[in-house]
Length: 423
Image (cartoon, rainbow, N blue to C red; front, side, top):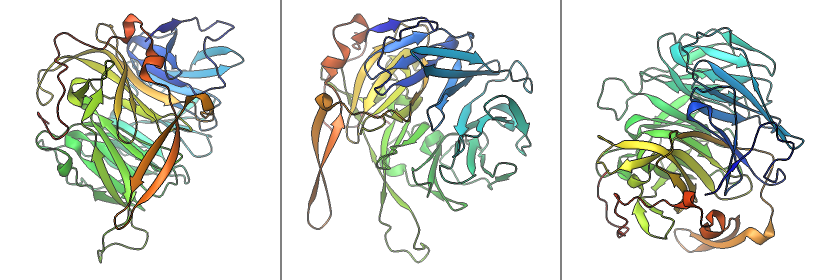
């Protein structure tokens, strides 16, 4: 992948802002614009790690957070990228902020981090709101797309509901963790706001609906070692869920009809899960996803059936996430049935941690359409034609040295789809 390098003060952006683009953040203050095939770097005022980036729903600007209580306001307009540091006097300098979520009308962003502290950003300044969580880090948060309710999740089995002013903490739920306490790192609402998923260590996954938690059966997805869930994202167009995490964890979540149960009400939501176990390398070889690296965050490109995941690359082969060596960065493209490596730099001195697509710009270039046939159905058969915006891998990546994903220390031998080496 070629890396476009431009200044934040540049009057002409090297990418087309009329087509979909995402913001990507990483270690040591790295900020990029990603257009689906290139990364364009913009300098920031911080050298601390940036942990997450999230756009307002209306696309007016985005917020990025990170170490040393860093809060950045990022605006892309009039052929310029502007970056403004927002003061956070309520926090100590040692604070690493963990998550951002915007409420439905974009009037406030909820920002979470250590000691259960909540920050609210109103577009101009930050303020704190009371929180009963005073000794645990809140790693994830997500505001409902339709109501004034945010879900928060973090250390020590913490899952809570915030109604804007007060927080209700759920009793510690049963988990898959072998340790006494479990951490949750991901929360995601479906587009209609009818339910949410909450995930964390040991592939512990909960469904949330109308104030209740339902433990999801993820054991069927793994033969041995379950993974850590780091991100949950729903396609805003079709509601397809994407669960990603450590060691290339990729699971597709689909809402299904509930089997008959006297405990289900008419509005009950039931889910089915499908794990993708292999990815397509740049040379077309199919490789076990455990060897790609970690997926720290993922998001769907608006107007397409394609999602993109970012995280550190795996530098050396390991079993069950033990004694693994990670470094550099990875970008992968994900569909409902396939994962393809787009670019990977194992030698970079930073990792990528978060990605978020500008929400109001949708794919529309007919020259990039590919036809897919999806079949579904139980008794009988139904076929649906879906148009998806994508280019071929070779078109996207070219022959840049940064397009090389093959590590001589890692075997690229193909595996049959029914083989499972580990995890």
